[in-house]
Image (cartoon, rainbow, N blue to C red; front, side, top):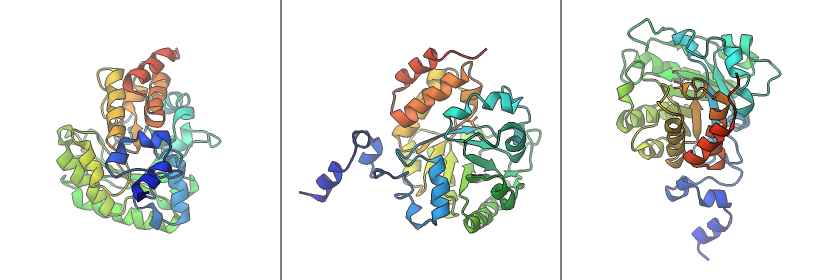
Length: 305
Ligand code: 5RP
């Protein structure tokens, strides 16, 4: 028996259907993908916190992004964070928020892992959004029992240098206390930057600086971005798409091309049916539903008045 055949016998049906298998990105049973993507070298605490976010059973995650207020203020449909978040948290594997929202709008007893946004410093009123510093300390992340911290990098922008140095320092601090770092490849107002060449460059730099996982945008040829980034990737949804099906298709294609999950905000909570949307996204990410199957689930879940 060849090694490949023996290996195949240890796979579940879900893993056999995993498109990553064909790309050499196959997950092992009981792995959350970090084993294959740098995880073996991580200390126990880091692995444990990452496993709270990316499910070891299937290597995927549905993160709910709701940190937009840190530069956009009261974003539409996120004006009252508690009201937006409460019905969605039971369906999220993790929620990405600032400390202000954690303290005011999420009950300490809610059993949801926190990915704490710790960078900021420029608002939407400023033409250049890249001038960020670390605004929340690692001690505060520990106090808030964060499962990870998140910081934006602005590759190619005016403050590229500062944002990358911030990332390196944050990784050093995170590793001291066992808190993983999510690097966000931010594009500021230049949404047209979202192509495989740029995102591949930004994601790879984030990984080289030690980010434990990276959040980026979906794009054409996304599998190239995945292949050249040695740590797990999650995709943002970006501005609200025209239809729910468009957002479901984005999530589906991202998973097909090797993303470990989504970190989606506006396309969930700006939908007319946010609970239906997050359930639909979950079915794609964790149950391999097609966009059409997920849309049926969205339509079947009644929007809350
Ligand atoms: C901002 C962020 C947001 O969390 C991000 O854009 C994800 O949310 P959305 O799905 O609404 O794009 O990291 O830099």
